[in-house]
Length: 56
Image: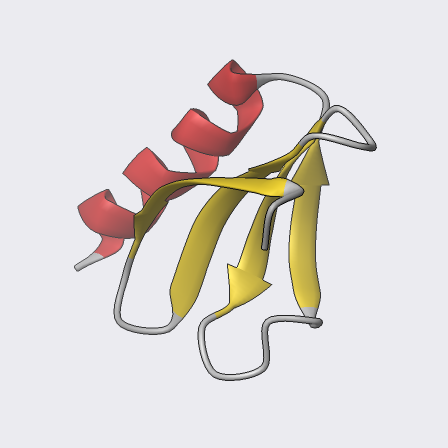
C-alpha cells in the first residue's frame, strides 16, 4: 500500500492516487486489485464521485 495515497472511500469503493502510474483510481473496497475507473486528473475522479452522491 506504500504506492497508494488513499483519498477517501464509500460503501463499495476506495478512491486512491497511485503514485507509480500518476493516476487517480477507484478500486473495489473488498478486492483492492480490482480497478473500476482510472483518471488522469483529480477533477475527473471528483466528478465521478459527486455524480454517484447525487444519484442517491
